[in-house]
Image 1 (tube, one colour):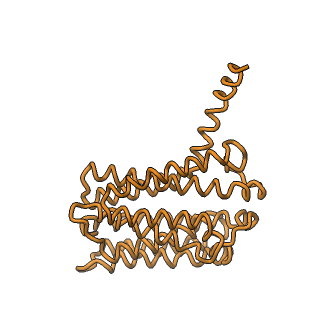
Image 2: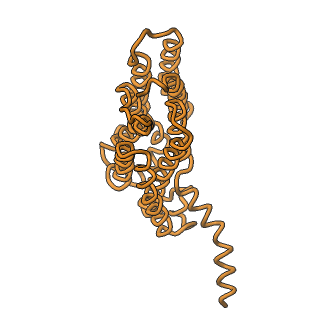
Image 3: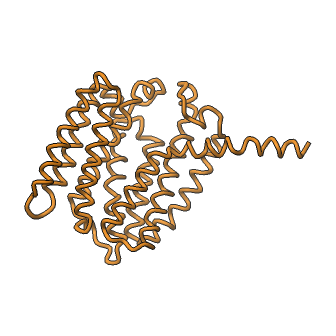
Length: 286
């Protein structure tokens, strides 16, 4: 009997492991971690410090993703949402909560190892993301943790440098605006499903049409800040990026009438252009 139970548990393990991996929201986790590491390379972090920053961000994002799925498991199950392992029973909710707690505990020393100020800023951003999961996701302030989290990334990177300088204002402002845009764009395709699950964040209150029309505003503002904010003359390449970003941001909502994810695709294109601008000024961040 004991051997049979062991075999059954072993057979379930790959499915549970896959469910746990999918419960962390692997796409956003990988994207934010890659963004932090890319900014670190642009700012000139040493390999050791870059690894610390990447590990801290990865642990923080894993904790946030697992917390999100564990907390929403009951609501997702009642709404019949697909692609949610905890809600579908592919992995126990208790296991997802446990993974979130372990990742959060690991995030603390990893963040502080980047420097006291750097670690404090990053932990504040992670705390804001947990607050989003546990409370703000269903309120009109749902955009705020995203703004805080994205604004914190340039700060984490520059404060991890040996001199621990604060980042330039335009890097922080652009990060916050891109965070708002990320929230709107990420929520847009699932607004109706989220509403059915009882979520009432800012995009859900605006509705699909209102969110689609608002999305270009923070995208264009972030691009303008990155182009006009840094000192010195604005070169033709930056102006071209601003014009193309404006076209993509405005075209997305228009095409959204025929293609459900057009606005999100436009947002991704503008965010990529903004990242190129930001990386082009990597050494000027502090």
